[in-house]
Image (tube, rainbow, N blue to C red; front, side, top):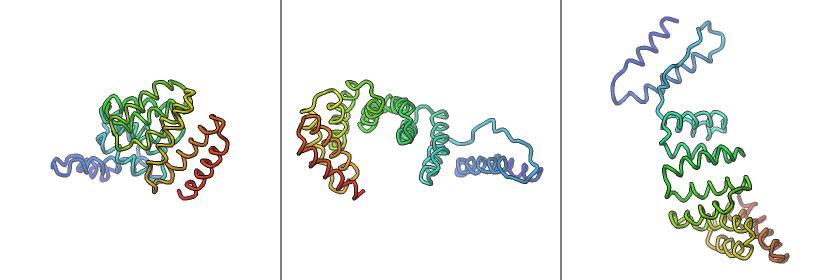
Length: 230
């Protein structure tokens, strides 16, 4: 045990600038391995100082998420924003994962933090609008966010138009909703089958709300076609 701790301490004492960040990550993982190794008579180790930077926590979260380990990824993203609350990307990653897991409250909080740091990031504004839609609240605010997103990030307008169409439908502006969704499905890239499936599905809902059953059925059929191509 003494040898193990001496090895660890020697790692921590390396001061070379080039190796410092890599060393801190290895040291942290080394300690974690000690804590969770079964069958060894090791004392409990409490890490008083987190050796990882916010960026390293976020990167570790991405790795976990790519492996399907969402619980671990979530812990790392939370650690990242605790370490440095000014990390907009970490807040965005946290918001995206929380949204996919159906935790719209945490997603909303994370997106708000990210948007405060990057107020002209259209993607963040669009995502925040979706958290409002999923929680059935602040629909007018959602409309404002999406319209601003189209101004800030015009290259993503086809995607934002889908969001706007849903917002307008919730607000009872059915004809405006149909117009936005029609523009969305005609401008979305053909290879974005997942987005097209969703947009056509929303268009079907808007047509149905307008009492146009035939057009609603046509849009629903097209949505199913793109859904198969996902």
